[in-house]
Image (cartoon, rainbow, N blue to C red; front, side, top):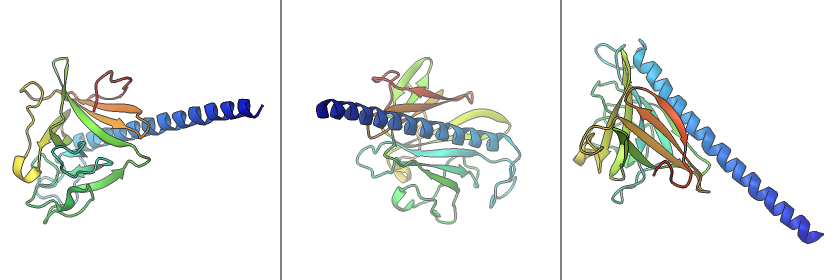
Length: 219
């Protein structure tokens, strides 16, 4: 009887843990998709950017992600940053220094474009990115980070893909077979190995997709 009760309890605990893991990564994926949608809404609407110069009603809004650390660079992958492009250069925060590159909303010289930093938590992190073009997905393992931006009047997404250290390599958007990517997938993974991906197409479409046994590919 004790053995039977032990087996039943083990099954219940295992299934409960699996359910919690699935629920948590599901919630994070939809939070991320909603944050991207919010950037899209802000980007195509006449929303004033605090601290911006010139036409402050027409600025990029977007999200900034760190990729799983390439080439030993110590980037955090447990958060994303919602930002407004106050200097209108189509990228998240420019400058000569980026202290720590840890994703905090810290000032970078005289520029601080971060509106909000979202910490994922619960052991879930960004474990990689994929690029999409002409029906094919491309591994973006060499990336250090990426921006997904929107600017009025178009709902289309704009991508910035960064190689190596920002201050030395800058961005390189032609990472999908030598051409600009038509979509980007942000891959999420829990400590238990559960995976989801949030896909943003250049047309502005945003979706959350399951990843089971590496299909579709992610990370």
